[in-house]
Length: 109
Ligand code: SF4
Ligand code: SF4
Image (tube, rainbow, N blue to C red; front, side, top):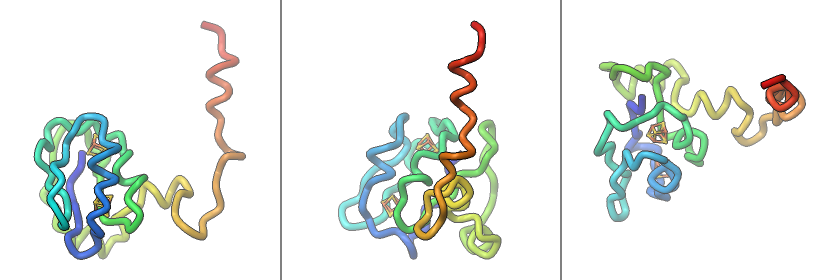
């Protein structure tokens, strides 16, 4: 579930607002978006993927929220960590070659 929008890192581009499929964020003019409907988060990680400055943290637990501070999450390198782990960060190699989803298409139904 979406947990953190870093006010320090956010550049107010509103990409997260645009990509969120369940309208979790409210845009704020010239400021970081607000997490307005946290319970609607589907933990799809789209916002974290698209954030250009790693200002977001989506925790993997779909069911409940965490009481975690930005400081702790930043210290542990978790801001934008999903984005980094799948190779979307600048300077990272993409991982198209290790994508196995084509096998789903080949699977019997
Ligand atoms: S993880 Fe997905 S559903 Fe949750 S806030 Fe981000 S984009 Fe929206
Ligand atoms: S995508 Fe990142 S930088 Fe852009 S508004 Fe959302 S949190 Fe801020």
